[in-house]
Length: 181
Image (cartoon, rainbow, N blue to C red; front, side):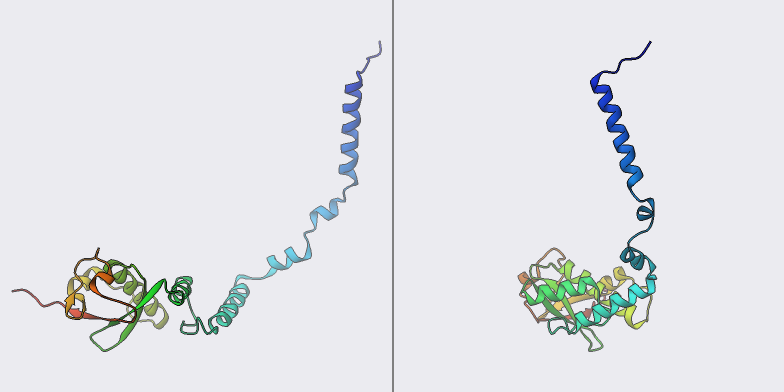
């Protein structure tokens, strides 16, 4: 007895054979070999990619807008410099006891705590670039020293710098706390 196929089953069988033929027509060699461009990207070792990136970054830092930045610049420093140019940030000059002035960039509505964090980040980056002390106890630093602006101690970490009267390019002093007897 012969099986009768319905027209729909005949079409399904026909579609399957067409799909099989399409798969056979594709060149398996084309699928296995990646494009030359993809192969070149994978062939570069990490050190060469890092060198290319550093060369591009060095060219970027030569821009007049970013020329104040060090060669080993971080994204955070680039963003700070751009914010400074657009008036979204300000530079607070922090004077240390040894006479060194640290240019610290903070946002316009920064608090004293934001300034302290920026000082910490500035010092960490400086130590990484120049070497020196590996670890600084910032808890000890803030217990031993305080920041002073025009004779007023910046004691309240939540208070905004502008509430103390600090504006762009103003100088804040790192001053040792006096012991209470």
